[in-house]
Amino acid sequence: GRLIGFDCDPQSLHWAAQRLARFGEAVVLRRGRFSELRKHLGELDIEGVDGLLADLGLSEWQIRSPRFSFQAEGPLDMRMDPDLPRTAADVLADASEEELTEWLRRYGEEPMARAIAREIVRRRRRAPLRTNRDLVEAILQAVPPSRRPRRKHVATRTFQALRIVVNREMEELEALLAQIPEVLRPGGRVAILSYHSLEDRRVKQFFRREAQGCLCPPHFPVCQCQRVPRLRVLTPHPIRPSGEEVRAHPTARSARLRVAERLEGRPAPRREEHGNAPAPLP
Image 1 (cartoon, rainbow, N blue to C red):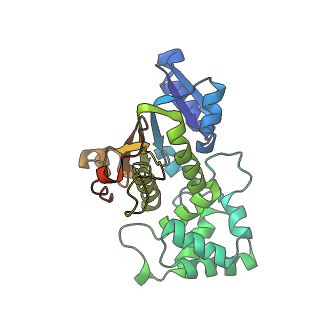
Image 2 (image 1 turned 90 degrees about the vertical axis):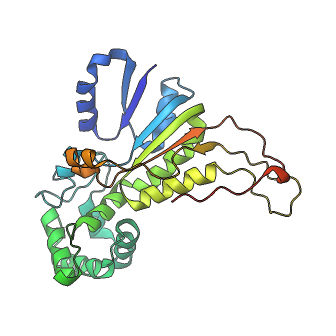
Image 3 (image 1 turned 45 degrees about the horizontal axis):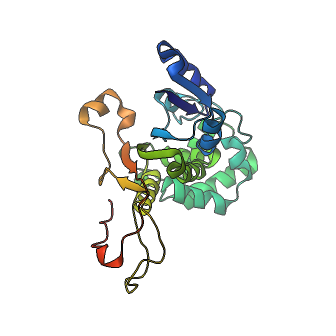
């Protein structure tokens, strides 16, 4: 068998190549994004795969890098792929207060989204926000001490939301999910590691939808939609890291792993064979 690895960060690929060099031609590494999965497999003459592991998070070195960290001084970048045209500074310079508020609420689940967005707009009228420190200072000014979280830095949610926007992470995840049933062979398994509730919720919803069969109204005596389940969920509850894993890798604390198996694709059952609907996943 072969391992095909993809990453949009050239530095990550460089380090992976060094670590996996001993496996020779059994490992193929390509630079690419989730949305380009089928394209790269096609260029390698691969029609289907037996397993797919997608890690949606940052590596530990990326988390500490000035490109992403609010604790490191550096330019406001946040691009996983350095060839992307817009940095975080560009996004902050162009977005309206309404857009910033929506992004912070949706992608950061930030309760102080409006106040932070207003402060960003107020400050950029005087001078552009160009560094991590510029953004952190705006957040500190917008969020009074009584409203700051106790267990995480007050800038965590804003930096997460901005990173998601810059890298179009949710769009890339949607593109990946859409390709899974097409590239995964029957019996093959897909495992997805997510690190915040927005990603985990979307993966859960996708697995649940693809595990459903007939969607016809209950009064239909025979299935008309011919919908066929394409996945079988193997993890009714997400797998979380053990205490030992968290002690060894504190950044894995929020990790959630969900796994599903590709089905052969059988005809939808008759209405009388449907039985109870599958229980919703957590």
